[in-house]
Length: 82
Image (cartoon, rainbow, N blue to C red; front, side, top):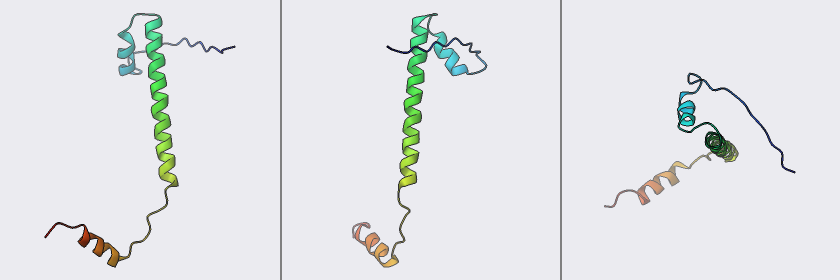
């Protein structure tokens, strides 16, 4: 059995102008509800990606100290051609 969530809300243009303008492009009913559903889902996916990206950067090891001799050798090796 599938569960259903019904939402009835009012959105003033001043509250969120871009969302209001986007939803006003569609007539009342299914098209407007489907667009809102699509926008909400896209927002959740982006939010999840941001959270995953932040979590992965938190888990990365801290930068290790670099030996200056090795750093100079690397710069010389990969420096401009003579």
